[in-house]
Image (cartoon, rainbow, N blue to C red):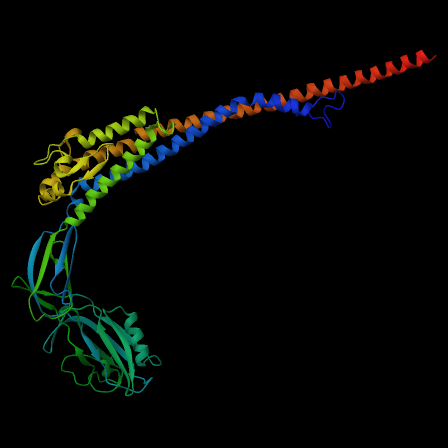
Length: 471
């Protein structure tokens, strides 16, 4: 861009001011383009909000479109300290009477006390899982695990670490008190089949005496080895008078959709009740109503013209937004093929002036007492969009709007293209203004120089005339 150090010196004109004003005229179209750009951005942002709220409406409708939104249940126990109960969606409503005769327990054994860091002897220990019946042991299906004990690594602490590393289905620890150290071995799992037997191959040649590694053997009736501190046993209980046995105190497969946690032996029957969770259904329906009201308010505000303030919403006059608003309202007035309810208003979900939904508590309470009928209003599947359940039709409608080729996505793409074109037009105006500024400065610089020369010539001529007159 052409510049001069002191434009206007020769002519006396404020060249910089003149050029600035001429460039401002060149940039005059920018104001309109910038106003357009701001409008495009506001509309794009508004459609982003609409997309988010439509998605939320679709999600809320989706919860009511399938079984999951209606299968919520709650469970209670008359004695949760003894028998806890949890349920998953879809668990059948039922009432049960339970008793607990015994809890499932893991087998535990303890060795005799020895002095700290006593060398217990060398050899090997073999651990087998299975069940005891009196002094008779029945091995389980698993493979016995052998643990080798070498010299220099045969203290109780070292032996416990080897047992734990062997992953034999038992855990070992060392108990220390005033009498010395004891090895404690316990089944990792409760239940009769998770008992264990420990046999030893003692390097001293005697596997059943009270010395060497034999002291850590365990078998019922073996007085020289470890002693039993707890026998393995199953939980025993009754459900509606039917006796059950379980290796675990957590009964997760006994009844469909229900988990029972046995914590105490009972002294009186415990009542378990599973009922439909109407509060969860109410919450799902309220979430649907709230999601609709949110998008309805957004569209209403965006498309209205406020006579009082003489201001228009971001999408006032936008046929896409107006059409979407009308379509949503119409959908809330539509019918389904369900029975006995065919309209939202039938169950107390009523459209108010301005398109807002509200819940008539009296009518909705009556409808929720007929859960199957209320569920049908939202979930019925007909294969015809207009008569599908409200959850299904609104979920599908919302998905169609926000899909990659949906109405909202297409509008967003169009606005992004308009913003890009607007930016290119602004660039063109700025480029023209830059070229014009350079041209104006060059022109006025040349003029300023020429006027300066003329002024110099005029002064010279005036001087000569004065000299002639004096002569």
